Image (cartoon, rainbow, N blue to C red; front, side):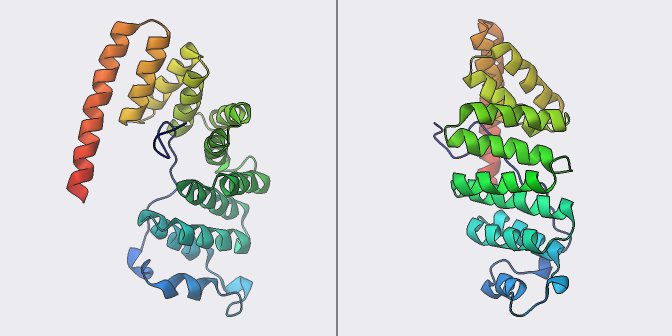
Length: 231
């Protein structure tokens, strides 16, 4: 298992940028209520983009239950498959933050059902892989991790998640290739170097592993310093 909810895997909502953060106060309990009250609005009057922005704002301040509610309503009102899939993926991520793995699995599967070959399919696959892994469904997790990079070969967290699973399965050569892909695509976090060190150790390339682990340690210390500075 994992000592932290996201140790090993990396999950990020597809979008974390909000064009007008002042439009909705995420601390205002009325914000989502006003947007979500089915009795007060007709379906064609719902601003799905705004609902998505509200959910992302809630994610940013760790109010994941409210985020999941906003994303679910966005999905239900969305008339565009891409927007609906985005909403379901984000809902799945919100449930993952709450360690609600059954709900996370359902949301990511719904995203794939809506738009299996669309813009958010790879994100749905890689996040579904994580949720399935947490439920102990290792083989299904591996399959979806592979599907993620098959759908989008330029998704760094997809390569990272696949590499993580392959390290756990003892597939060290394949894992090393995946983790190097993640790094080349811009995944620059201590965790990817830690997993790369594990893969190298599995290949008895211990000198290289020690160098990579030292890099991972330096990056982790820098990450911790940034976290302290932001508080």
